[in-house]
Image (cartoon, rainbow, N blue to C red; front, side):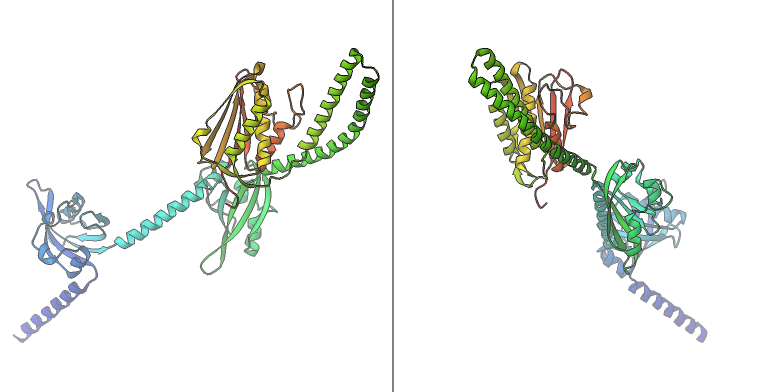
Length: 485
């Protein structure tokens, strides 16, 4: 009898321990009975037992749960729960999963197993906060990835061994590969086609001293000139582990600098030519004046007038050459582009007021458009292209269209000036912005070259479109940025 009493006491102690564990565990626990239809398909389940944590993690009270069916307690219960638990209860195969409960509006991590036939038990945790954190991390990562791929600069993240960890979309496009193909590749091999780092490599310098470095590089494989910078990356302990490699395309800027240098050389030449030519032109003008004064006969008068006109034209060419050879970097300020453009149109119309030309624009659609620009240089560009458009009209009559368009995706404003003149030979479209190129019987061929350089110095460009006999269109593109931004 004593042994039996001891055994009962021991059993009760164990049950007490299990009950204490059951009541104090952090995870929710529930024992259920699966309910099937006549065909044996799970359609619901009944709660047999729950622990206190179940109430805390679900918000459902014991008195409203035990002995009742799940669908009665939770109307709108998703089929997933019944199907998953039914499979566990009927097959005996345990299941571990994470799922969102639309009814309870919470995420749960669940382990389900079968303790007896047609029954299943679950141990679960509320992971809603973790899921929210993971979602915020994912959103931050997606936003970072989007920014990383939207930046026009070519960006690569590299480790100490010069291996690429990540590149952005613009760099992958320049290399002609998918982003994933660059991962693990040596940067000097994939970018420069070399077997070791180049002598100018800023990443190699950053690896040596863990400091920022910058260098200008011409890289044919990437198709241009680049300002390359490297910024060190350190881990939480402050140990150097790699660098962010940023390559900014400066091809247009370098081209503009080169042309400016050439124009500077032209300026020196123009000054010499002007000095050498003006003296004999002055002598010719004086001689023509004296002949006209001494012999006013009509024959001589006509010839002398022609000489004077030719001298005047020669001096104008010299003046133009001197003016166009002295382009300076723009003095940027906040400018209302529309106001400058309207002013230029008015001046050109006044200059060609004898022309029977119609000008049409879409300016009524626009508020003021502010950009960072040199207004004097902008007027020079607009005047030159507008004057060319008027001069291209056959028989001094026709139509000129001026359109403005905001291209927000490129952060640019585009001004299109189109005439219905004779057009430009397609073969000349690549030449018309070259200094001294002209098909006109008069002129220096410097106008469009200077316009192109002014646009480039403003961070923009000019494009020409034409078909012979169908008129020409010039599109001036300028960045939509303001000073200090």
